[in-house]
Length: 437
Image (spheres, rainbow, N blue to C red):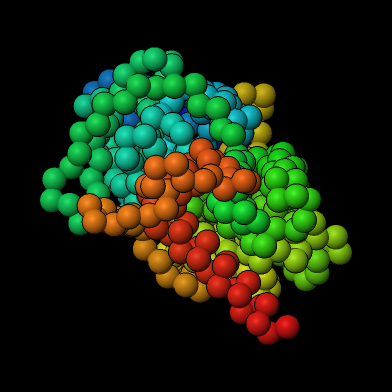
């Protein structure tokens, strides 16, 4: 090994004095004198530690700007974690606080879930009813610049921190979409993002629509209330069919995803995880009670459906409980744990991969829909010669018509081709079921 060209600084002498004895104690006695630990052992590689110390000293003495020891050591921790995978990260005080705010479901920003893909800041999904979704940002869009700052070389957390800010402040982002020649420059106004995870309505008499935008602590409880409400609107009888919309759902709380799947399953495994630590290996199964176990089900997914959303879709697909429709999902099949470091800092570390009931890992693979339906909009040409009963003067109204509600549902179905196809499939399944009896 090359000897040091200068004596160690006092700070780093103390650092090595604490670190090297621990490394020596971690080695078996026969290897204590070796310059480098066996890669397969739990011991620390002493030669690499000494090289790290030498790099540290060079930076301290020769870098163009003075950098304090704390900054250098935290940068080293960031580097260790950033090189593992896109989802592991060191969280300083500000980032740790930001993560807690996101978990609690309220923060100032534009409303997108992002990740790193091919070293580029990439949109996983826009959150419903936020500046990002209203601006037309889509899954897989690459964020190239944020307020004039290039994202090249930025960590994920640095990019997120640039996008967050006080409500009512403007932000300019430049995004590049696959298949387009030039990037888009968008100016958005930050809002206080409150994430309401469940929405519902009747698409047609007896046919419900349940939208889950992400998985929070109370999502399953809210979803059950929504199903009950739609059944009350259907004169108290069971629904003839339900569309579960998981499109652009970035995931969230694992237990919440299990509870949602349990609404539709009365037996069998939902998901299991495998990792190196004993506590990272878990298995979740459905309970015998399934409040919506008999309702015909179509599940909508797309490229923005990730993580916990893929757990639900994979479980329902493997259990043959519903028809998965749409396009291939995102493919995030890893589990992260947040580990506190002291009071104000933390470590987000990938500790396991999760698997569907049939043992499929969706990591970098995604869920393939049973019925592929791309996004589109149904356009109906109006003919000036077409005459319907409703056009006749003095026509009678249906005694039990819902008027504006029917019009709203019809508009939604025209604007959302995938949703319209899901409703058509549910109706067809009911026709086949009635004829088979």
